[in-house]
Image: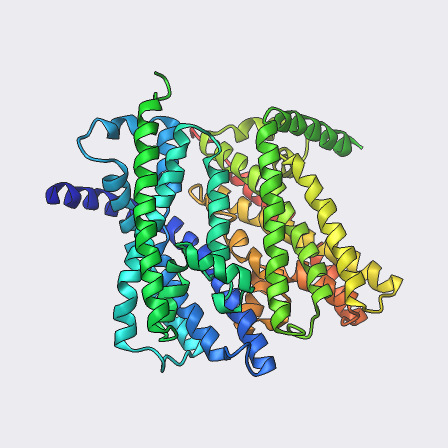
Length: 265
Length: 261
């Protein structure tokens, strides 16, 4: 098994390197909104002294950490996988004795992510030089505490995106469904603004959903802004959602595979 | 006249193509309404925490959202579909047939695909602009409105020209099929007044990829912040960029040699 993964890694890593120009464009595209939100909120905080207790520096550090957290927990499997179902190239992978999504696609996504984080590092340092965040509230404990949350966030997001991608067995409109899913992330993950500044109702709903593990919770753990209670609650909700996401994925995958008849068959 | 006839023919073809995918059109419109809701929510969150942003009030940001959506619609309804077709035609050589047509090639390449259902988005954008201006309570003179409209048109022309230059670069670098991503990447900067951005970002969105010239600048004219000389400068830049773009396009076209040779 280890050998298979190693081989898959070599193939996917080489494949991702081949598209490095595309990768840089993607990274640029993905960097812009957090930087804009950072600029907007710091300008508001500077004009008013603070925003509900958030100082300009709080916003700078929040979005600087968000750039890394979002990169870790997000995935591109809707782009890799739904196409494979639609154009029938999945057939070749199905005859191999390993799960296509949980091996090849997963490794491909991790290779993409690793390369992105490599490119992001120098950009991040330049941004840190420009915005001069003061990371005084960040401790080693906070960072260590956030790592399981980031992994959990990645796993849940991967399985839910995988479920949506598997809907391509039934419908050609998976990309519209995925757009809706992406809107849910924007709303409940704290990408636009730290959830504490969102309307009360959205905060309450967010507590029962897994999306805050994608960005808001790990960032706040790193910033040491959460009470023990909130941390425990966040992890518990995450674990429950991991089970839910696994079940959802297994169900759609098994049924989808039975329905699947490749293009041309 | 010839051009108008062609344009209406393009529209007809594109309407027919859209009608073949009715359910998709409905889904897309629903998603579009969802994004509008999200945009309004973000503005209401911002203004529940502050009175003004960079000196601009709620109404002014609604109007800015309207102008932004004009540019955004051009991006989605015109720039993306035509760029995709163009890149494809460079790769497989079908550009040959486009060049052989007895019409201006630049016109043909940039207007043959139009996502027609997006036209309702234009109406929505104008509604947002009107509501925004009313909400802002700014004192608006007819002269302000006139300069606003002129600058918005010139801003759209500047973005159009930049697009022409970007796709014309494909004639030199065939593999450059990321040509409009840079435009899309910085587009989101048009949602907020560029005055709130740090200087380096403001320089990028004003001079390098002039999104702000198409969004912030017309709104500034409406607020009466621009002097006559500035207004004329921006209009002149609009005309100049179109002329430069046509030149670059022609030079690029001369380099085109088909896919097989």
